[in-house]
Length: 297
Image 1 (tube, rainbow, N blue to C red):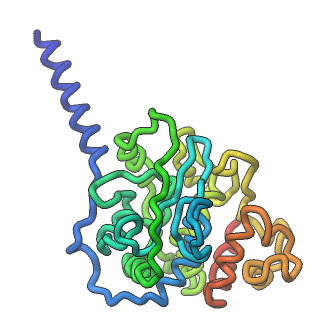
Image 2 (image 1 turned 135 degrees about the vertical axis):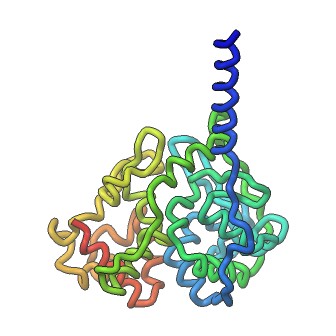
């Protein structure tokens, strides 16, 4: 009987622990900073993150402006097909009904309004590195766009990929500390590091993952299998030492102008959309990104 009681206690404790890990831990609205939103800076965050690349209108959105993040275009991955949602301020099918707190929770904690875990095809494990002020600005920019009525299709993934397990996965994925500026580096280097690690979410493609699909921090930006399941993504380390670029200024020119200035492979394939989005950033930000990437050994 004692053994049975002990076993039941262990099972109850384990179940309680799993429930605690799987329960969304949303940030309350009163924890947001007192900040006057700047849609102009939000547009910079939008371009740095390449939001339009994934959230572009799907093929079924008749007559939609291709420059609006109306969502619905399929994103193929090894675990299923995802359809990035509508980011325009339509209240029924977009994020028009979301509060700033809703948006910050989705971007930094992977929690949608209503306490639903979001699949990490949405790269919140990188966006959690963003400052809340920048996220509030991004929300203000999205709210300034023309609303588009478009409900993205549901996720097409195996039944075993249950949202209840995402809380456990997030506990592993969030184990690494969030980005913090390096006091021993310049302001420009830190700006570049922030843009790469936060809104740019470069690690999502350029960092290999372990068996649980968590990014391997020990090989950050070292390249690996393509997240969509075909081919490989190159390393972003040692770009100067390997002779890919002469120096940080050369890399900045590549990011800004791509193949227009003869930089092979930067305006085509998967990098084509990335380079197009980066070219819209202020030149100071492009040079900051180049400084940071050029420093990686």
